Length: 320
Ligand code: 5GP
Ligand code: MN
Image (cartoon, rainbow, N blue to C red; front, side):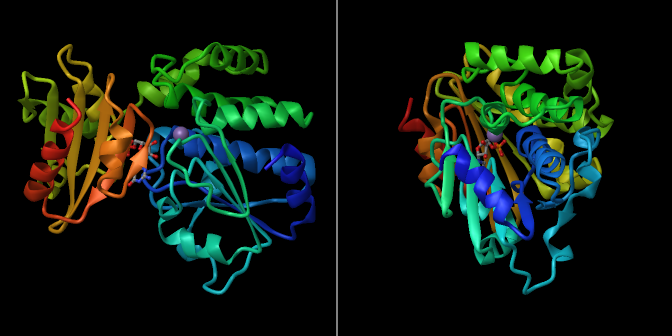
C-alpha cells in the first residue's frame, strides 16, 4: 500500500472501523487513537474504535480511548466500508472482531511485525519500524496531515511502550528523531512515562513479585520461566493485563537468554509470552502457531498449563 491509497480509501469510505489487538498494549491502543484523531480532524469522519476486551487502566489516559467499544456493541450484520487493523500481527489477533474485519468492503493492515502475512486488501508492513506508531508518524508527516498535541501524545505512547522506554533493540536513530519531533509537538515525556510505567495497580506489582518468586531456571539459567495459574490470578483479584511486564523482568536477569511466562487461560489453554536477548523467539512462537518479533513473541498452546510448559521448554532448548 502506498500513502495515497490510505487517503483514497478514507476519502471514499462511508464508515470506518479500526481494530486493536487482543491483550491490548500501548502500541495498538496509542496508534488506534492517533488514527482515529487524524481521520476525524483531517477527513471529518468519525471511525469506530474496537477493543478486544478491557482496556488496561494505565492506558485510560489516552485521548478519546473511552470512545472505543467492544465488538459486541456492533450489530451482527454490519458491513463497514473500510476496516483498518493496526499493530495486528495475525488476523486472528483481532479476536471476535475478526469477523467484522472480514466483512468490510475494503480491508487495510498497518503493522510492524515481521511475521505479519500481509492479510487484507491493502497492507503496510514495516518490520524495521519500532512500533505501529512509528509507521503512522511517517505516513502522517508525508501526507502533510496536522499532528496536534493529542495525536503526538498517542504516537509517543506507542513508541515509548513498544521500545520499553527506548531500551529495546528496535530503538533506532529514526525512533529518537520521531520522539524528538513529538516532544516539539508538545508531548511531556516524563508525564507519559509516569502513566505507562509508574501507574500500575498494586495487585499488578504483587502478582509480578509472586510470579518471580515462583520462577524456575533451566540450562545453566539460560531459560527463565514462570507459570501463572487461574488460582494465582484470583487470589490477587488480578485483571487479565496484570501479567504484562513479568516476562520482561525475567529477561533482566544476566544469565537469561530466553524468558517465558505461561498463563493458564482455561484448563485446556495456555497463553505464552516470550522474550529474549539474542534468540529469535518468533520462531519458537511460530512452532505453536503464534508469532511476533525476534525478541518479543507469543502464542497460545491448546494444552493444560503443565503439558504446555513441557512442550514449550522442549522447543526453547532447540534454540540454545
Ligand atoms: P506479548 O507477550 O506481550 O503478549 O506479545 C509479544 C509480541 O508477540 C507482541 O508483538 C504480540 O503482538 C506478539 N504475539 C503475542 N501473542 C501472539 C500470538 O498468539 N500470535 C501472534 N502472531 N503474535 C503474538
Ligand atoms: Mn507493536
